[in-house]
Image (tube, rainbow, N blue to C red):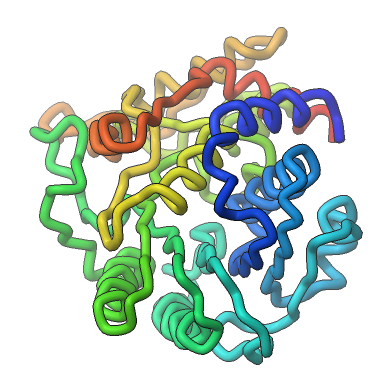
Length: 342
């Protein structure tokens, strides 16, 4: 473990230490444990398990144990953690009690919306149903469902920060958004029928180590472009608004929502500091000594209103005492250093 991660993990410990008493000697089952979210959750769990002597047993579902072991050996060859190979839609149920389930499978980085939306929708819906059936058989008492801000649909420009009270209208052309919204509903219906507590985290945009720099995430692509000396390419016109929560803060938020959130009450997970994509590209540039040039490929339409994807986080603040502790520039700096070290 490098000192950068030590700093992040101590930050997570500081802000979650009061949560873990009830988890001592528990069995936790995780889906989606090998993606961006999953790697961070596992990093924090292994650190907390050791530092707090929790004696947690962790089972992680993954499609390919050998591939993940090759990629992240430090997350595999550790005591207290077991990997189950299988597909989230039909994995064989372990024959043991599972106290907690964290269902984070179907990472948006799969990027199936364009290539195979039917498969993406099936993985979300059938995967969630299978996990819920497992929760019933394993006598699970609490589950976290990791959802997305995409469930709201296009954010009206007049709403600067979209809240959980906004009526969800997911884009019908997005299998990911529709699937996540219907899976939320499935979880809540199941919770009412079977007495399972299901908490819901709606995630927005993020920055941090493990963030892919070679797919469709603007933040990751900008950092990649800058590391290569530039130019930093903005594919669109740079006008959409986004906000970015640092990954260590993401983990703090997820653990609080998991263990302290109300049953079937969704919580936005993100930063409320809005920034345009063009501004973000220039901020990323300024974090590098070479200050690479920014190229915006499209000209803004003066008659069009910029798109927004920025959450209100008042519910998480007021009900769970959560805040974005690490600001955007620091988050970019830490992500940059991590990638440069690799």
